[in-house]
Length: 148
Image (cartoon, rainbow, N blue to C red):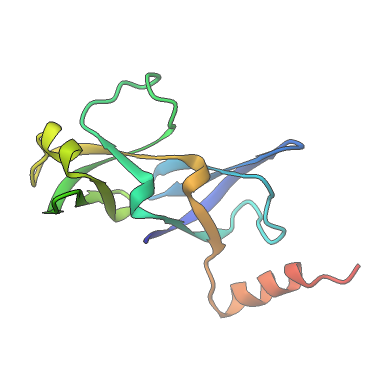
């Protein structure tokens, strides 16, 4: 599981979805949730998680030609090729991210260590939890267990 810390910059909600904009080391990412967490506020530090199999890789993207808005450009650092799947490790502004892709795709794309790739992260696939320390835990607990 890939994890990275982020700061909540904006939240927009309608009757069906919430779009949460976070910033990680100068990179803006969008997360979509069907239900906005009760504890979440603009300015909160959060932990984002995304599974390796939920990250697509491309070598050439043109803004607007892909519906996935979360693009992380990075350098391929390491890979492990299997018969069916290959694990790819990429250094990004969010830290080291791992992706699982088919070995056929790996070979078709001519991936190698040191090449530049773009990771595509679907907004619905990024999980969100509070980034807890002793003070944020108390704030979170107060929000979750409010008695009104």
